[in-house]
Image 1 (cartoon, rainbow over the protein chains, first blue to last red):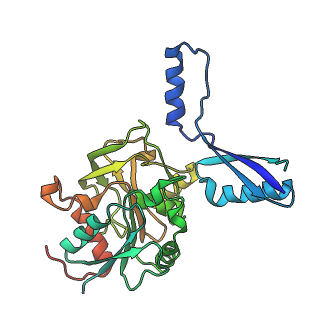
Image 2 (cartoon, rainbow over the protein chains, first blue to last red):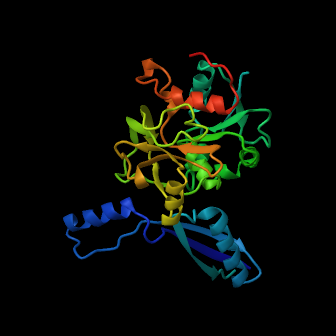
Image 3 (spheres, rainbow over the protein chains, first blue to last red):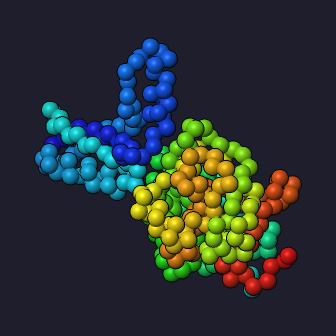
Length: 85
Length: 227
């Protein structure tokens, strides 16, 4: 089966995020008030062949631990969805 | 006795010739080590130079750490061989787990290209053994991701074990505890963001980097160096 995977990579809590801070400071100048806790991350999408959803999830999490994230500064949220063929 | 320094060349490295020039200018020998090779040959020291290994895709060093030569570099380091990562090379060594922590984007979100002052904090490492503790060296930096960060526990360990070998006099990039360079527990692996190889000739604005390159050559077994 094929599964669509979305990996959302974020800086870990407590790790300074200069991009997020800059965006947060800019928003009020454009009239967007009341915005806080801006964090910038990245999103990695791919399709994976796996026997079931749990296997796809496990595979993607293994990728995160070994390659897609740097655990010293980043966390990842993995979302898996079966593709209808 | 001379010493042979292997300089790792990844696709996207761009400081390897500067390192070779600095090493040979001080009387050492140097050779390139292709990233696809599985051996470091008969070198006495390894330098992972600056640049943009594998385009810095995903994260600086994230792909380079899987290059075949890195297993040989890790083995060489594990056996006590001197290994120095400069700039992108420092990023590669942290990704490879040879040094703790990580390098984040500069606090000001600007690529920094300037000469800075570094203070020698420890002379107990392969890159600082010939320096004087407290000496201030003028050396250029050239990076976007040079903001060193690590857990509180790791920072406490680095400080307690005298493993912060170089600090910025005036923190340019938000780096934790003004850290410019650190070493591993064995003190034979050093990573630093500044480029000592680009400060080895007065024509380039500073020759303070020679102290560091000379230290590496001494660590690699050179017994007589021209003054």
